[in-house]
Length: 315
Image 1 (cartoon, rainbow, N blue to C red):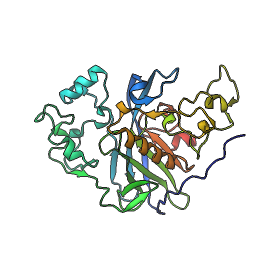
Image 2: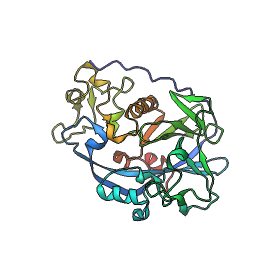
Image 3: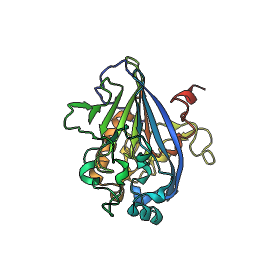
Image 4: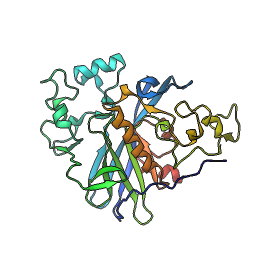
């Protein structure tokens, strides 16, 4: 018998007729041969390494034309990043350099939106501080806007939130753990009452197995098309995957994620895992598409820049 499906949790997202247009940018960088064990546990045969793209998102406020770039991706001339980052890249280590881009290329009239705790953690920048991971040129001469969730009384799902444009079209969500003050985004792409959203997960998770399955999205009785067509053409029994669950080798294996964020992958592993569970509340809703920054399975599914989101889905 398939597991009983629990109705998705209430998110309490206010109704709004305001929307944003979302362009998903494939920054064309591709990070390869990343040891699975650095980011996720427990080990699974066949997941020794993983490869991933790096997505960035251009958010256009439909009524005002204001634009926001959510996640800056990889800086092309990475050798000009702070010395500590250059060395980490050469050593194969990962320290968020794949999200910081080069803000100095934007005009000084462009605000730099940063997460809670950024100023305490990253200012003073490189080269004044030779050990800094952020260059001073990234924020020098521009308005550095640090988001404060403490000042906002808005809570969506279980996440403290900030209504960025003030009209319900785009929210920033507090999702700490992977990095200091890590944030996610929630973009409304169609108006209420038939609202649809894209959840921008950033580095909240690095693999779908960290937030699926759940009691809201359990493993189905069968999977079609089969994810392993060579050995299971056509339909594939969901129980085949439940049987290899290393975290929950029991009846709960159909409703619990297969993977946990590792201690090494997070600034605060406990908070990171909690943020992933909160992300799962949004992922449970059919009208919300969840996109993490490095999900290679989405490359041929969603339309990417210069197309608007959804154009590929409609073809």
